[in-house]
Image 1 (tube, rainbow, N blue to C red):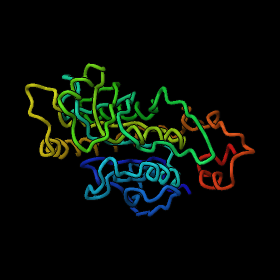
Image 2: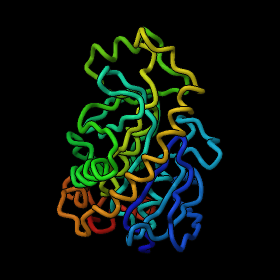
Image 3: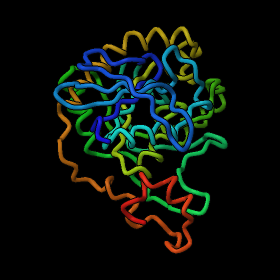
Length: 286
């Protein structure tokens, strides 16, 4: 079904989307279990969108408890072709200040044991992930930041850790030596799964702190993060509205054909059960 063309995943501090017209809640069943919450669909800036609170309304899920597969599969079920993902992050660079927005172009995985693929169980696929975000969505977000008058930085690497604890000083210092730029706990899995689902994806990263490496700033605390989040959410909402408005209506990127040459399993060996489970993703190929 085509209930929405643009998906918005709200992270810490962003649990609803003000300004959504004709809002309607959808509970979506998936082969991978229950998504984090209901999807709220409606019209935003003349476009059909679907909003999902990543941690559930009331923030009831830790990063490790999020069912990323169900979340992305649910957006695919609703017809979403592009995802804007909002995420609170710590800064690993002096110039990336709290209250700034960052549009990462790369990800680095430091999670442990999270499932980040739809495939397996007799159906094998290997997507290309050298360039993990869609530049069309990044362009729209960058333009939206300019329109909204919000300081932003295009580029850099998002380091995804397991959490829920923040980094030790030793870890934070090591990540800086590796050349990482921002640190978070959620977006790597989303990006991989969105690519497998042939959905365009990009992150709007809201800087809330300097992690714990910065000698002139206090060690990061939940109170500090929430303080900056509350101040930054209004900016994020402005940016999202402008980005939705600026988003091209037609897709010309390669995201929509990411699986075209990714499926390795002999079509004759794919079980009926595997085909049925992943029909939404691979139906046009198998």
